[in-house]
Every structure is written in C-alpha cells, then in structure tokens.
Amino acid sequence: MKEIPVRLLLRALTFKRLWNICLAVISYGISWATKRSIVWGQPAILTIEPTNVCNLECPLCVTGNGKMERRRGLMNFDTFRKTLDKIGDHLVYLLLYHQGEPFLNREFL
Image 1 (cartoon, helix red, strand yellow):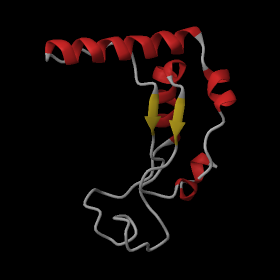
Image 2 (spheres, helix red, strand yellow):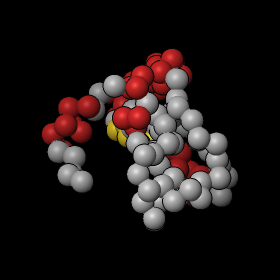
Image 3 (cartoon, one colour):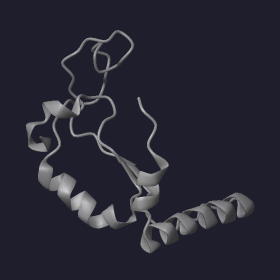
Image 4 (tube, helix red, strand yellow):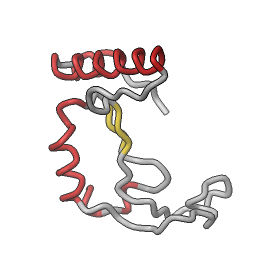
C-alpha cells in the first residue's frame, strides 16, 4: 500500500478540520490528566465498511476463512451519504474498507 502524499493531506485541511483536530487532542489531554472521559469534536479519521462480504478465501482473514461472527451485509448508500453529511466536514481521512471487499457493493461503484 502506498503512503498518502502529505500534500493531499495538507490540501484537505480546512479551518474547521484543524479546529476539530485541536479539540480532539485537547480533550484527550484533559481526559488523560483528569482520568475522566471528555470528548470534544468529531472523528477526524473514519473507517466505513461498504460491505463485510468478500469473494476471496484468505486463510488469515476472518471474512475469508468463514470465522466472522457478525452478520454479513451491504451498506445502503443513503446511510453512507447521511453519515458523511453529518461529519464529513470534520474528516481529514476516510477509509472505505475493513474486512470486506468494498467493490462488491454495487451502490458504491
């Protein structure tokens, strides 16, 4: 996997996103110091799984080897759109995969 070019990340930084990152870092520091959970801001990095289905049978992957315990399914594109409408302005980085093959969800093509 290629590294993400720094220039692309810098181009994605807006005042709103930088402020959100500052809030998250400050709340983490206060939480650590006070030993109380304090959460400010929205996620700056988000992983969305369009599907947890895969057509490969990789022996080390719980999806491919059949040991995944959660229900298999496809994400509805409306759910994806609503999620991004809610927090998309705060995100710096979005991953569209986790344990499934995202291109198997035809709504995301």
